[in-house]
Image (cartoon, rainbow, N blue to C red; front, side, top):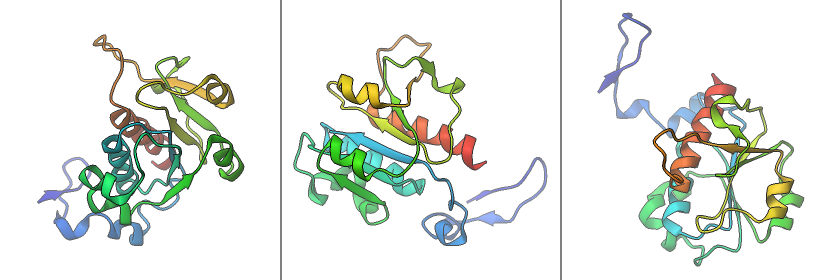
Length: 180
């Protein structure tokens, strides 16, 4: 069990009953108003991890098909576990369908070809963080439609991070900026 307090101020002990998903009912994560989108994901385990991320952070996720695997609870069970029941998942059968259905707000593309470092970007309420395919990113037409192209700086010199890990970093930064 941990405690939550400011500075040296003692706080009441926190136990398992103090954590999600009931935090949603208490309104703690209400109004974060950022979305995550996965463009034609290749690997079920990565999409499952993003669904789990979405459930834990109360961030709706859009899955833009076709996927590189049969989209099913069974395919996602290993990484998403039972979080698919908690996540707000919207499936779109194509990029064009997604554009017709997407809520208002900017499309913020996470890409190794990004022009702006994540730490310098200002997220806004209503932004959708778009993740590309593990094998190929996104095509030019999707890249051109994005309102911003963001890169996660990696001073260690690696080529890229796992797509689900990158999504987690970007979602956490957006929530930090918008929600707190």
